[in-house]
Length: 110
Image (tube, rainbow, N blue to C red; front, side, top):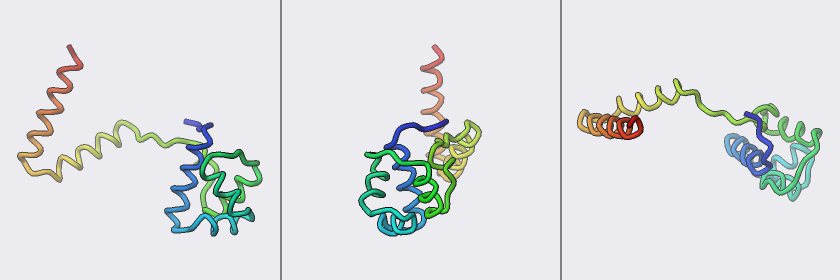
């Protein structure tokens, strides 16, 4: 899904920066921006030109696609994650979790 919310875009930039262990000042320098300008972009309080975006993406070693799209996990991935969590539970915890899920599913299928 395409994102148009500047705060979400800024948050995606923040996450990319943190994955690399960089400061805002380091990204700003690599992208040829002032510290203030980059901080405003990451905070989502300003728009940016396409050229600026490309410089930031290069500095963060990412593509613009990773900034402007939301990755919503598919249902099968979510199911696999839940199964993994259940498999790491004790038998008693697994039984309780499955009973809770069963009660919830029964309640929405009235």
